[in-house]
Length: 420
Ligand code: UD1
Image (cartoon, rainbow, N blue to C red; front, top):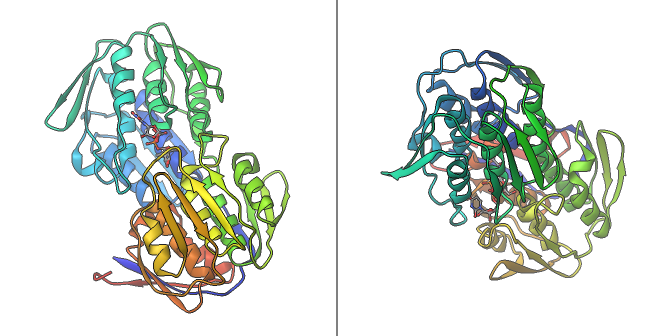
């Protein structure tokens, strides 16, 4: 396991290129199971989650060749329709193979994901969605076993807006007989990217980017080429990193529309943001103003940026409240931030942060992907040395984070060693 050693205090300066979206790639790669043939993806981020998804598809007979950020996928020889526990426990997004497998092959055996570091994350909506589309679904020894001759269209109303369930049901419905309607569908950019990719392959989907998707099933789809959209959470993380250090940076090759909620909150916190077609420049004051945030479904403030925002508020000039309405118990990073000198108290799904003059370096432990990012960000602003242990969580979702931060002037290095 590797760790990062950060000497805080450097203001970030310069420019950085945003990588392709992890969560879009994690949806589009399994969607290739829906048609037989050769696909090419560009701008795929080089991340551990992407290699986990690739290995899962390879275990099913899919051929995948990776050349830097290009991925060639050949789905001619799919011969196994199973996502074993070993894969799913590493990455919940493995459940995305469920819809494509049932729709195309009439059978899927997918391990139930179980909980995650910050509490229960159910998949009931995925399962109910498959049942509504006419699949028989049984739960057996920790596995979802879904079978169907051909899926049939249905009207599906999600109680909760879910990115994963919308993606899974949409992938299943594109090959179902008839017209499926999904109400309260997720509108996140990654779901829009998935829908647009499916349309390119021949699917018929109306209402993309709205909470009502209408999907007219077709008999067959064709493989295509696609470029991944930029990663909005990586973009947001760099913007907040700049704000935390009183820096001045430009993030390039991003989609500013996708980070609108984050940009608005940073402006409220006192940063000046200049936006072009595909880049954003941020100039930040030495200390941020306190700004409350409540996470919400897109286009609201993303839960995947909640931890990083708490880091920024830890050194703001006053008190703020951050509430997570998507995940009620996603605060594993709070005790670690407190080790760095932050003043934070948790009350149910909210935290109250009272900004301190400065954080002080210490050893802290990563517990999950975004929690790790918030600790690195806090380390950039802390006095002295911060060691962030178990950075393998970060490697799941941030491409070359420490290298990108170094090009912006941060003092951060990776140390390899099994004891971290
Ligand atoms: C995706 C993202 C993740 C992000 C999350 C919320 C991927 C690979 N991951 O996760 O980074 O944090 O969206 O934006 O894209 N829910 C149910 N039943 C279900 C499914 C979800 O109750 O069957 C609930 C969840 O507990 C949560 C809410 O719905 O409260 C939203 O979760 P969801 O959008 O499904 O998250 P994921 O797709 O797992």
